[in-house]
View 1 (cartoon, helix red, strand yellow):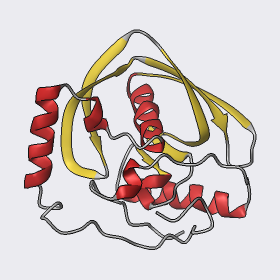
View 2 (tube, one colour; view 1 turned 45 degrees about the vertical axis):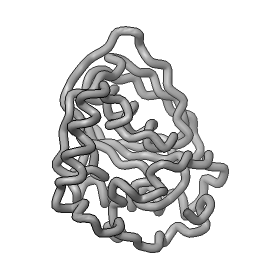
View 3 (cartoon, helix red, strand yellow; view 1 turned 180 degrees about the horizontal axis):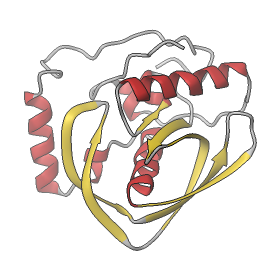
View 4 (cartoon, one colour; view 1 turned 135 degrees about the vertical axis):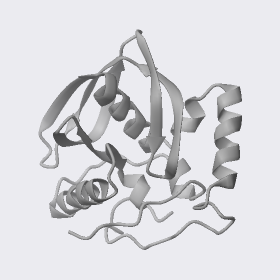
Length: 181
């Protein structure tokens, strides 16, 4: 499957709420494969469909040797929290201490429309929360405290990939999914 272009900070698709998946068809399976291939090539621990320009509630993950995906996730988060370094493929080379729930139970569907439940702690919990945030138009820097967020925005402005140029735009082969952004 083709490796897709990962959208960078500043691309409006990253701030748009993704639509629920309603068709569990061949195009959806192609999207999941493209997400997995792109994530593994990057490499990353997770990748959400909006990060490749597709406005659907789908993400993939690769944590501790576990490769998977989740569609239309619904999360149940623990009250207990963790703090740790977090980065994002849409904000290359930037890592900031980010507070997240320590545990998560995520319910959703696989690419065939079968119900799935994923329980995770620590890194898997962080990844599932991070990728679900992408589906809601939220970036991890939005979760930072005020001072750290200021530092993150300064780092973004100074990043070579930001460079004042508009974000790369590539037409998705999954154009039938969701609305054009």
